[in-house]
Image (cartoon, rainbow over all chains, first blue to last red; front, side, top):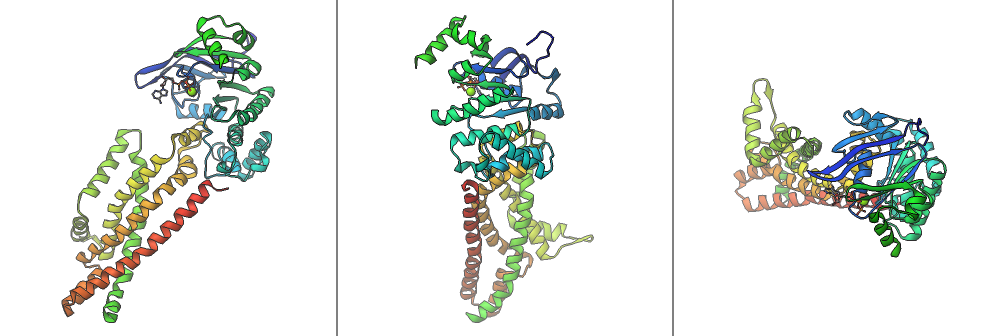
Length: 249
Length: 215
Ligand SMILES: Nc1ncnc2c1ncn2[C@@H]1O[C@H](COP(=O)(O)OP(=O)(O)OP(=O)(O)O)[C@@H](O)[C@H]1O
Ligand SMILES: [Mg+2]
């Protein structure tokens, strides 16, 4: 990122608290357009909480979120604007089980963006094709494999044509084989220049696909660096211990 | 038996009418009550809680007397016995149904709400397109139970003079003193009328659950 280029997404002193228990402490992070940031760390580190704070599924207890330099929060309108521009993919897919794949994907274009139905359908078909699932358009999620379901969920988020995509452990509910097809889809997205923040336990993905890796523990960012450096030459003992532990398995 | 049946049959239409109309009122009014009760804001929640609790705390027969003999007999508001019964039972069952709706809404996983929020779906659209269709499946069996309970409770409309099955049985018994026969037939009629509710509920349940999981 050149010094004068404005970051696409900025987290400024973000804290997250459940009731009065703070679990994410003062995290600041800039994400440039087209950048892929992997968020790694042990269970309970606060990775999901931080990710969910970005689109206010868990409103930050302190700090600011800025998208293209514009602060989000306060009004319902800036919040909706943010959510239109920030796609989210969940660990458990959260597809709508009573709707077909196509209906899942076209719902938000039609009812959030207000596109005419035909246009929403076209856009949805395009995204399903993009993730390689055009032929599953009329299937309910229950009839699709886990990997297919997660790709439908990715298509659903992409159909909003977001500026940033957030992923919360998108493969950890899947067998390695099915996870691989989801990772391949994400790799393609990254290659196309999509800005992505990815919470992941897949160290290979972090190392190969991410531009930058952020290591979190106990609600703090312990260390962040370019993927190559952090994964191969971690500076902080906490990071070293974590990487050794996950690689040891 | 034949003459009893033909006399009581005069009340069948009234019983079905009160039941269906009151159920329609309850089904419609129960939903906003349920939605308000799930609000995050206590100022919104409180009035709904009070309404539901008061409706359920007072015996149905007292509600009917209250509506028919006081509210319904003022100069500018004259209610028929049918109207009073439909309003009274409709309100009481709206309170019952709101509880069933609430359970149905609670049964929809939090992840479904989160997905609608992440997609910035307007709240009404989230309810109509995502949450309610899934809640409905959970709600249908208790709704059928309430429909049958309402059918039975509709008998109290006879005390304000609605000419339903029970009313006919009372009238007939005052003439022929054959209480055993008359009320046995009345009981059988209620059983028979309840069967379609059970069947419809079972069928709807099957169709909807297939729609939910099936391709
Ligand atoms: N809804 C919640 N209510 C209360 N506490 C919560 C809630 N969600 C998470 N926490 C707590 O916040 C802390 C951080 O949790 P979080 O889920 O963000 O961690 P994580 O890094 O995503 O962990 P994992 O790798 O297990 O997903 C944990 O101590 C967790 O117990
Ligand atoms: Mg997590």
